[in-house]
Image (cartoon, rainbow, N blue to C red; front, side, top):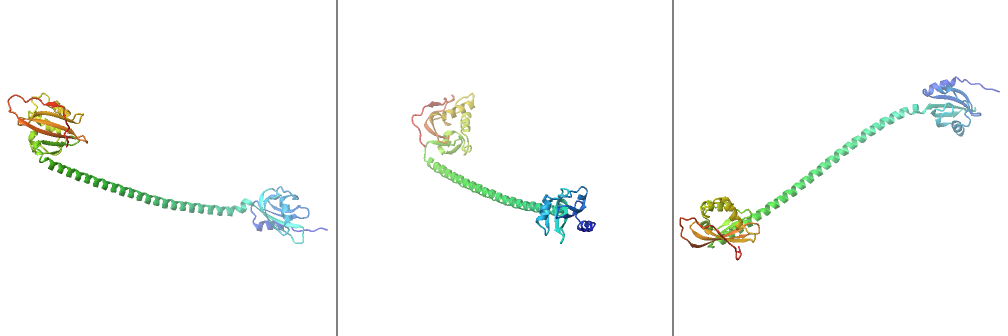
Length: 312
């Protein structure tokens, strides 16, 4: 006995299913595994016997139909297959669509989704980076503000210490001036730069320097230079050499020295020097018996070694 069917109906199935350019529609004999009818590109050089193929094994294992993805045993193109058996017949209707064509809409959607995800990620990163930058800028500003406040605090502390030091120095200078009021000898104190800091009235008379010329900060070499020009050192060929030599004599390595010279009124003066810890100098001028002045030049200064340190 034989049975006939309209194989052209399979073309209608292929067209209606819109299986794409690489799709197929086939009618498979489940009794022998042969291809009874075929529509699509696979019909060019088909393999008509599907026995012992993965596709045929999948169709045999699910007689009620299903979906299987893999290489079509007819032409070895990877497709998404849908199959179902024909009721009352040893036949299976198979429809397949090439995997790339089937996934094209999904791939396009996935590409769009990935683009949106990338854009959202970049936006989140941008917002995060902006927030981190603002946070860092805020913390950096706070650090700079704290550093500035600390520097201002230290500067104020230094100013306070300096003011206290100046006050103590002024008090000490005032006390020293008060102590020198009752001293009969001339006394002058020079700082580490050999500039006049404190002096008493007898020193003005013995120095030969006009009172209006004496002021705080006057250098020792200026006083000695005035005395040299006034003739207290006799006739000199080189005033600057005499001034430098006398400063060296007043600052010996032993820390104290003594020399004699004539004062502005012809009185013999004994000058004692004492170095201070800061490199300054204390001069004590002692007036001896006056000697008559003559027209002859005064004798040169005589340097005598100190026998005992003068304490101030």
